[in-house]
Length: 97
Image (cartoon, rainbow, N blue to C red; front, side, top):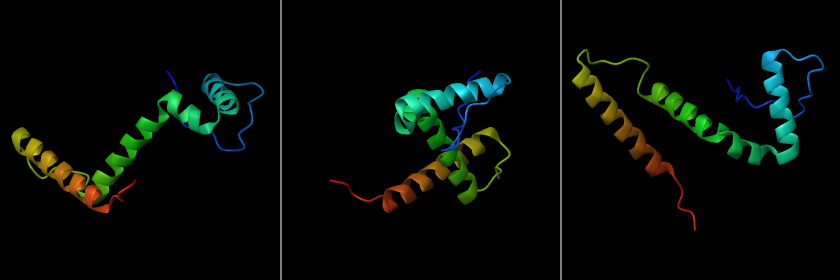
């Protein structure tokens, strides 16, 4: 199992690491060797972070629970909510050149 929580900027290696700290030490070493941005790209942290942020926005704006009881109604509810979020995102995104 890989732990993809990024260590802090001034993270030090644990002298006698437990199993979780060994993974953290490995992440600290990788960040030192590759740089934080490249570590994010190679580790898969960036896509995971984007997904977590999207789910957070969904729950904050739409709500934490479904209103429909039937599965088909829930599917329609999620599609509508995603369409709303995508519309809001497209309106707020700047054009880059």
